[in-house]
Length: 277
View 1 (cartoon, one colour):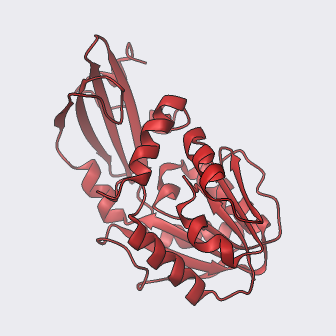
View 2 (view 1 turned 90 degrees about the vertical axis):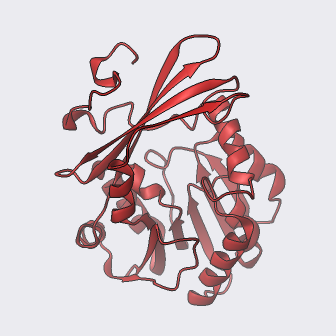
């Protein structure tokens, strides 16, 4: 990857390469997974998961807005099970999927409730099964999948839900995605290691915005203290409201509702709820 001209600093990748095999940070790598788990659990920021007061507020919002007695819940991208700890006691079944091994190990260890199951799986490839009353994907994870993957995810959610079941999809607001892509380059130093490595490193972050595709690409050039540079990408699709409606309709969902009272820090996300008819 480091030898590719497209990953040289200052050279924007071609639009055709936006969703190739290197468009995401490898959160499923054991070392990356362990480092991101620390960020999920941190109460000092909301950069990987929400802080616990917001997790509790959102779980209460879900229980209040969709009061199904003893529901079966499918939590896609469940991380370390923060929402399960708030919701699973109210459910007859709770299934969480995530492809970060450290997060799944933590959830299995810390959320020991009857009917609660955590699976190590890539949601783009996994079989969700059926019989769920609620499917949820929060924290804007939906935006990091390619349009093709996004369509597949929604089709599987529709299949997994019972008639009358609800899909909750929290999306990154398109203007927030655009702002990231149009941001300037930055350089940061992690003296004792951080998200990208256990050792010290310097990270040059470049941002690119592709107007026609509605996509922001971040590229991280990580120069390691012991020598060598590793390059990572994070690609994010800015889904406009009309596009979201079209995607949901293609999957079989109708009449989505944008929920303005969804509790969150800031205004970078929006939540859409849709019922399977």
